[in-house]
Each structure stands twice: as C-alpha cells, then as structure tokens.
Length: 583
Image 1 (cartoon, helix red, strand yellow):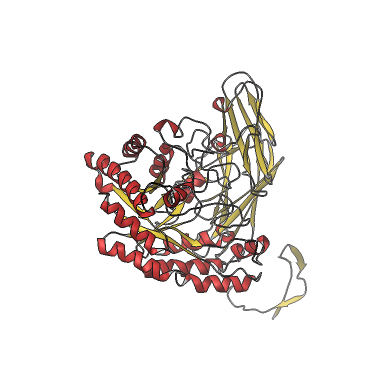
Image 2: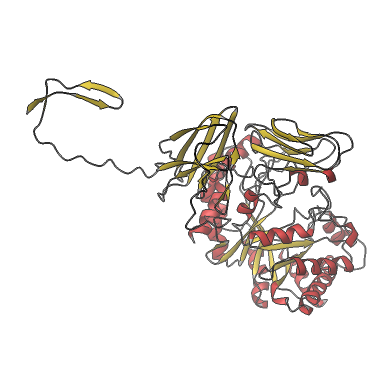
C-alpha cells in the first residue's frame, strides 16, 4: 500500500484522494456486462432541413423501441417493432423526415423485450437553427431493408389470412393515405372512437377552388392558396375536416402525416402485408347488400369510400398488389350476370400476374340474420334452401370460371364454397347442389371460432376456458364431416373466419370492462398459439382471422384496437405475427 494524491470523479461527484492508501497492484478492470436492451446509438439525421432520429439497438432480445421528441411546441411519440427504429416512421427502410421550427429539441429512446422488460433510456439534444451549419446528410443505407410486413403469411405450411374491417371514420384503422376516403359528411369526421390515438404530425390539406379548409385541431405551420400544413399534437380523440361553403369532398384531400401522394397508408400496408390472404367481406359491405347492376358498385374515383356499397373493387386489387398477397372477394348476392362478369374481368385486369384471387358468392349464405340467408331459407321459389344456394353459387362460379379460363389464367382463380360450422347438413347441400348445377369448386370450408362461458365475470376463468376450447372445435363432428367433403374432392379446406368469439350478452354476467381486460391480457397470446396449432393439426390449408382493427365494446373481434398499436399491447396480433415469423 502507498499514499496517493489527486482527485477522482465517481458518478459525477468529485472526491479528494490526498492521503488515501491504494494497493500497489490492482486487478485489471472488468468490462461491465452487456445490456441486451441498451440503445447503442441515437442518431439525429438532417435531410434538406428536415429531421428524424434513428435508434440503434441490435440485440435479438429487443422486441420494440419507443421513441419521443419534445421541444418548441412539439411533442411526438412512436413505437417501432421493426428495424430501423425511426422517430417518424419509414417505408421499406425509406425514412420519413419532419420540418422543425428553430430551437432545441430532445429525442429519447428506450428498448423493450417481448415480455415488456424495459432497458435504460438514451437521450440526445440537438439545435435547429435558421441556417443549417452542416450540409444535409442522407440516412445511412440499410444493408438489408425489411419487407413491408414482419411475417411470411404461413404457419407450419398453413396459409394465414386476415379479414379487413369496415372502412369508416369510427373504425380504428386508416387504410388510405388520404383521410377523405374514410370521412363521413356532413360532420366530416375522419378518425374517431380510438381514445387519444389519433395520429400526430403534419397533415397536408390540399383543395381546388376558392374557399378554406382546416382541421378541428392543430397549429397551421404553412398556409398557401389551395394548400395548408397543420401540425397535430398527440393525444387527440377525434379529427374532423372543416370546409367553407362551396367546397365538396371531390375538391379536397387531407393527407395523413408523411403520406402525401400515396394511395394506401404505409402503416396499413405494413400490417396487412403480414398475411398471405386478405378477405374483403367488410370492405365490400357484402352482408345485406343491395348491389345489383354494375352501375350500383362503388367507383374508384369516388372520394367517399366509406359506407355502402363498400370500397371500390379496384382498391381491393391494388392493395393486394402493394402488399404482395392475394385478395379474397365476396360477390354481392343480388348481383346480376353482367355485374358478375364485369367484376371477374376487372380483377383479371387489375391484379398483378403473380397474384391469385379467392372468390366466394356472398357471405354466410345460410345465415338468416342477413338478407341473403333470409332469402335462402324463406323465399317461396319452390326450391329447398340448399337448391337455391347451390343454383346461385354455381351460376357465379361458372361465370368466373369462363372469364378466367378464356384468358388462360384459371390456375390463379380459387372458387370457394363456405358452409356452416354447426350444420354439416347445410354445408353438404351447398356443395352437392353447386355441383349438380355445374358449378366448379376449388375449395370448401367453414368458420372456426371458439369461445368460453360468459355466465361469470372472472378474467382468469375466461382465459382458462379459452385456452381449453382453443385446443378443439366446439363443433368438431360437423367440421370433420365438412373437411371430409373437401378431402373426397381433393380440394383444400379453409376457415374463412376464425379466432375467439366472445361478446357481452344481456343474459350473461360478463361486462364490457371484463371483456376488455380479457382481450388485453398477455395470456391471450398463449390462447392464439394454441389455436394456431389446433388449426394446423386439424389439416386446415388456410385460416383467415376476423378482423384486423376494432374497438372493444360489446364485441372484441379486432386483433388491434387501433392502427399502429404496439404489439406488446395487442397479444392476439403479436401471437399471429410471431408465430408466422418463427416458422
């Protein structure tokens, strides 16, 4: 030991060492253990006066990174579960930048693992001046740009699909880059019903003609004739467009932040790209449809793509092309032959040549709660319900078959007969009567829901019940017989809708609050993993979950509660994506 002098700094506090004793030999320093959730670097990127930030966290344990920026009237947050972890988002590795007013800003980033464990926060401040000191720099190239989605659309060789939600302002997704496509006049609400999750950032408003357009909230940072940029802060519960007299929906565009000029919102494309198939029951507003002639359909140039008669067919094809997956379309039950033929030709022309299409005549033809089912069972035509359904399905299939066969593309067309899970007799009659009327069949299927008792209000009991029932179909015998129909014909067996089926009923004890607690419980991911294995073990060739995004009220079918919800908060969607990616 020998006396030493001087000073030393420990955790920011300075100590005087004069007169202290220190060993003449010390152990070599030991490197601190590596924190798998550490943010290794926080980069501020400047591109032509616009900014973003990238958090570098390369350890495989990182499941997501939450980032935030604050300064000069701006507070914005974003959760990213796919690299690169960027402050304002990215599309296939191409980062979105935002113009910032002069001043000092602080960016923070923190990583989480799949269980929700949090790493240490890293922060970085930077100054935005009127005259940039450094020249603009491009973001570093991504050596391996991620695909639009995170999953490959299969689970143990089984195709996994998703049903779209209705396209309207109160459904918590925004498929289109232009918010006007889901706006409802006359109050012109764009996004509502999702709590404080209205997307924040710079909305671009453009319009033709005299007049003025604005939003119900936000700060106007650019105002020019026919164009305005409105900065919307986080935490808003709804967003509405305000137009002066004389302007109509046809004159106006309202682009979500970072989406100007696009057709579909990049976050929506990224979400739907996870799946092999997207079924457009809800986009098409097929249940109770009154569409008959080709003129009755929604036109692609119509700015109002919400409400009846649903989203234009063209968008269903164009979304498939952008997501690089296959559409499943439902033909309106009243559609005349000319409509069916033109619909078949439209998808033949608009779909990319490497895309398939799955075609179903209406939805749940057997279900009397819908107009199509009421007609099948109750209309007095001198036919049985099976005969009526088989005749109409066969007619639809023959037209599609002819159009695609004549074009030499029949191998890309899959004609589906989807029956009743609880009633094999009905499924069998639909199949036999379709064949008797000369209709080709390429796939047969039913729904594959499972549930549990709601005569109590106990979350743990419900989770246990869902776990148990996910291991088997509650209508095993009927579904096994329906699958045998497919096996006998050598065609695949599909579940056109599947997942849990829980809803609040008047004569049951479960409340909406308990339903929400069950849906948000991390154990729901285990329930869905069990269900995926059950579907694969049963021999399903495709399962299509219902549906993408929806609020939790008396029902809770949505797999996310709002578009862009972190997977750590959406256990059902997380189980699907991680299951597909893992396999």
